Length: 416
Image 1 (cartoon, helix red, strand yellow):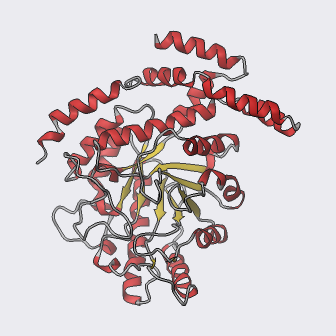
Image 2 (spheres, helix red, strand yellow):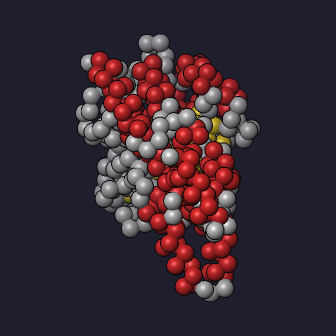
Image 3 (cartoon, helix red, strand yellow):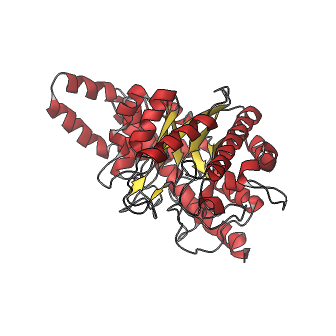
């Protein structure tokens, strides 16, 4: 049935000049950077403190991973349910130190050896994230922009250490590790001096990024936020700050779907940002009223993001990462839903007759543009998606859910 439906879909798309085989081949080359922290509610392993900086995973669904082995096992299961070859995004708090207390500024590549061994065995490369939250030295809401030089230097040292770890990932696994820098720094109430913290942040970033690292192994990106719990009135690392820093210093810029005003969308920013910034990292999430990091669904904004990437030919300069954590549902199901939806949206964008649409637009034929865009919504992209899943040896349609339920009974339910 899958092959028959695909043959019909292939013929229908061909009438628009779209080659479905080429679209599938293009999708196969796109890796999604899957966030490890969905599996354990962004708790990590260093026990420095509860999630902070406006970050929280709500819910108490049973079976969350409690250590590296359990987390890797859960990721293994998830990877059997999604087509394609993907990357794993790690946070610094997922270091494994064999029971020894190692503070964030003293982390070394050796503390991620188990992860790298797992990645080599699975053919999975990594991205990385310093963890500037959930630590006694971030309790007052400031890190790289801290007024206290001792605390600020601690976090600078953490950033430098993380770049070394990221480079290690790139060298060991043979694919560039993208390191994303996000900090929670900001004030709950209206500040008098907005400039001084930003000057300190720029100075700290200059020091963190001072050492040149071969981009073959490591690249840097910086991420803004509109507000957070405890930083409602002022965030040091605003979008304008980081966009300027990115363009001035040749550092990548990160756009998180939940880090802007509720009426803003990142799909509308991509073409502008990539006119000037060297590279783009996306954190694909689903904000509901605020930066709530809901599981990514196949909604209008997800489709708009992927359409913009394909229409602008931006895939080669964009790294696509996920960032959500829902503790109210099965965590492996959350991963699977989010990854598969992101891939579905990419496929739908790749199946669009972009040249035909662009030609109509350039000629001022907005009637044809609108008519085609609306008719495309009922074209059989789902048949192409099912074909891609079957071709990749992963469950077609909702069949993956039965495997998750079985894993829950045989593995997750046994975690007390």
